[in-house]
Structure formats: structure tokens, C-alpha cells
Amino acid sequence: MATCSDKYFFHHGLMLPKATHTDASLKFAADFQFNDDDIVIATYPKSGTTWMQEIVPLMVNGGDLTPVQTIPNWNRVPWLEEMVLADVIGTLKSPRMLVTHLPYHLMPSSFFSSRAKVIYVARNPKDVLVSSYHFHKMAIFLDDPGTFQEFNDIFLKGRVMFGKWTDHVKSWRHTDLGDRVLYATYDEMVQNLRGTLQEFSTFLGTNLSEETLQGIADHCCFKNMSANSMSNYSLVPKGYMDSSVSPFLRKGTAGDWKNHFTPEEDLQFSACINEEMEGESYSFPWSQ
Ligand code: A3P
Image 1 (cartoon, rainbow, N blue to C red):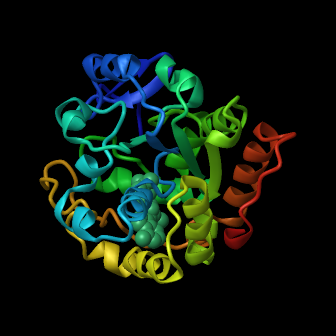
Image 2 (cartoon, rainbow, N blue to C red; image 1 turned 180 degrees about the vertical axis):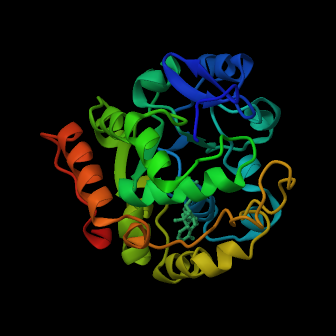
């Protein structure tokens, strides 16, 4: 039976894993001084974060593969709120790239007064749930998810790390960021990665050639990333993440939820999400 165990603690009402977050790491995040040219990737967990940690450094470095082939993703694009950032922050060159799962209102105050750009990536919540379910099985530092139905229940109640999917997505949709934020979806990236990369390039002002963008798209396909030890979490000890249970880069598709949900679960899940997203225009056409 899935429970909320002592593997977690609460920070401003947000459930966080103790293995990756501490009071000190959260204080470091709160005090963090953003620069105007910083680039932030913001996501709810299991929405394509790791994919973006591959794409953005490639874009910023003109398609040069060296960073993604030599630096683990957590040092290449470190977490704002996790423990590792304090150690690597001094090594980051401008423009710095950071990643966060924090909801908008918990971002540090210097973020709001800076001109740092953000790409917020959302994913069909049904696929987020499925990906998260398998992740909870292999990530030893998280609770066992129980059965799929049990995990479905706690996911909808928001008794999972970083809380409810709906709260997270809504927090980042209602901002004062104007042209500092670009919204993307995992589902569109699966459907048309090359086109999405063009949008990212325009937003970030990287001005990359057709050839370079195509090279980045080729490198960032699921097959290549799965084989990249700097990106597939195979460097993480087995006692922390057990890839033999489920690889971190598990399936990389849009619509896998159809292989997991019963028709009743689909109805119940859709009703709950639609009610909480009432008044919001959102859709994930390629995975519905
Ligand atoms: P699945 O479990 O559905 O395969 P995050 O990085 O936010 O934790 O998200 C992990 C999800 O993104 C996993 O989904 C993973 O396979 C997927 N992913 C990572 N890199 C990808 C890529 N290059 N192409 C497609 N999906 C990718």
C-alpha cells in the first residue's frame, strides 16, 4: 500500500524527497541571485526535464556535443533547489542554464527582478502519471508506488513530490513574465522535435543554421540519449536508482497511458483534471 513516508518532508506545503532536497539546498535556492542572461528550464517531474537538459546546452553551444558527452546532466544544467547546485554553481559559464521543478510562486525573489528566460515544458498528465509510476519503482529514494490504481489516487490528490500536476501547470501559466517565458509540450517535441527546436532557437536568440538544428534533433532522439551515460542516469548508484527495474529513459513516447489506464480510470482521471483545469485552455493532441 502506497503511503507518504519519512522519505519526504514539506516545504511551503510542497512535498519533497529528503534524499535530494534539504533545508540548506532550499535556502540556497531562495537566496540564489539570477543574472539577466540565465536560462531556466521549468517542469513538473517526468515531463521531459532530462530531454531539455540535453537540448538547451547543445543550442547554447552551437551544436557542439562536448558538454553533453562529457558532463553529467545534473552538473551541465544543475537543479536550482537540489543539493548539487551549491557545488557546481561556480563552474557555470555565462549564459548559465538551470533547471527547476519549483512552482512559480516559490521561485527566488531575484528571479522575478531579473530578465532570465524560462522554457516551461508540460506533458499530458496521463503520461506523467505513467512515467512517474515506473520512476517510483526504480528510484529507491522514493516510496514504492503500490498498484497503478493506488498511485493514480495519490497522484490526483497531489500526495506526490512537487504536489498536484494541475497546481504546478497553472502556477506557471499565470505569470508576469511576458516575453521571458516560452511554453512547450513534451507531446509536441515527440511529434515534431525539429519544429520545436526552431521555436527554442528563436526564443533563446541562438540563431542556429538548419544544419545545426537538424544535428541537435538527431543527437537528442530517444535512442541516442538512452545510450549517453552522461544523460541516462546510469552513473547513479544502483542503491539510489535501479535501472534494471525500469530505465530512467524508459519509453519516450506520447500516449503510453493507453497501455496502462482502464476505461474507468481514464474517465475518473479526465474528470478530475478537467474540473481542476476549468477555464484553462490546454490540450495534448498527440497523446489523447
Ligand atoms: P517515459 O518514462 O514515459 O519514458 P523527466 O526528465 O522530466 O524526469 O522525464 C522523464 C521522461 O522523459 C521519461 O518518459 C523519459 O523517457 C522521457 N525522455 C527523456 N529523454 C527523451 C527523449 N530524448 N525523447 C523522448 N522522451 C524522452
